[in-house]
Length: 206
Image (tube, rainbow, N blue to C red; front, side, top):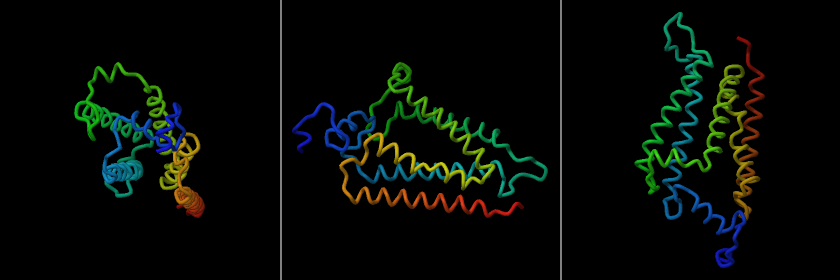
């Protein structure tokens, strides 16, 4: 309430005004929405992200022996090409769908508005380039060292937490319990990555 009464122009991270400014910039508003809807969407996204790497592993190594005898496995580069094509196709379909049929009361748009609006598109293009480059390297590393090790070494929770907490000011002015939970998460993830990397060195050559 004190933050709202002071009405600072440049709201500090973690204050009520800062959260309101973030809310106003969002296409999908979260104030007044059910927490369970956000959690459901997040868990669904996590399930999709957790499954695409094992699917890529099956495409290149055929552990379930679905290919006929004598049929060569897909190379990493061929599988990555089809992975990129399917990702682009699905992204295009979803974008067109949500332009005209938005979810969570987001405003409707059109193809012309989408093409004419270039605010922030540079960051989005950069994010896509980095994602594609990172996935390609991850798949090549998975073929060489194992996909489980390649997935863990990405250290997504570590990197995303660093960006969010250090650079974007998330969780500032939070309670000590919040910081304790974040620190515990990071420590356990670092330990898991270290154990997985150590186990990779014990593999037999055959």
